[in-house]
Length: 412
Image 1: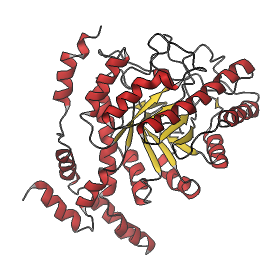
Image 2: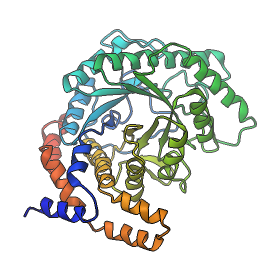
Image 3: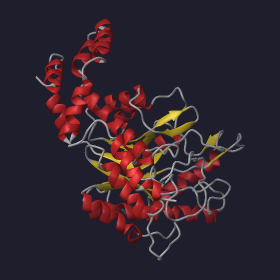
Image 4: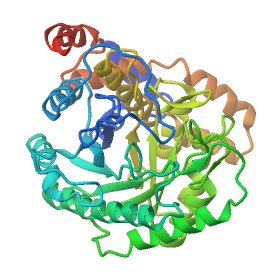
């Protein structure tokens, strides 16, 4: 008997069908962020990162051109199992000599990304880029009291909606467009309300253009603070959740954008009570920083369990969001994204029906015992089977090192 067949029998004794779990894994899309490959630099600016964002490290091989980034994405995707989408920021426009500022970008500036996606049969998600630009005045964009600045960024958001619909129509796969702004203050503000009212006005103006809501889903993402924005952000959790619920948008939670004792896994069920769709940026927060490579840690596993337990796989958009320039960037992509997949498989293998019944019956003694038994079930053997069915191996570092030696080290 193979190790998988043995694991299959063991899980069956807990009421879990491993074959059903493996089949389900093939239908769960995961949106992978493009910005791990080039340290969030993009192609429309030569300036440094701003907006409370910082990438640390100088590992060799950063992608410098669209062609290099696409090649690196291809390499990463070849080592990541399952259905994938590619998540782009507006700063990754490819101009080919026909440049435009962010308030004037058009679908044609993303034509090569659409061609890339269509050739690989994947969808595209999108993000307006409200950072690293000269029109970020005093750290403010959509909340700026300078009307010229505010209008510039409103127009950027409107153009991004048009691009998102272009993505959806060309690929035939709905596009999630996520709005996040870095606007905030380093020290305690005298007026918290006015910036938020300007943010609300700006979002209203962005959303006033018509778009097909069956093709484009718009989300708004919160953040508790950033570098240089320690005391206040206009787009707090309360603001973004209130706005999305009132306007029928999608709330997006990044599990590195909350206070250290807050858990996104605990919030998912609450949002599912009031929203048709919920979006996630899965990352790993370490102290003050939210963008470390995802590990198969307790919170990642619990986030995926909450989605699966609540039969919400068709209601939750799952995306990755992190960047690490201190290690091989492709390994960072593969490690983090595989860990999301592992957590999803683990959630599908949870004997959740049995555990829910124990909770409903008030048998918390048996519930705790079952939860601890579950931790030593042969999950790894099912994961290996999943990889095998996707023509992949558990170990991938040799492939990445070979690519590094042949390709990455030659980038100077």
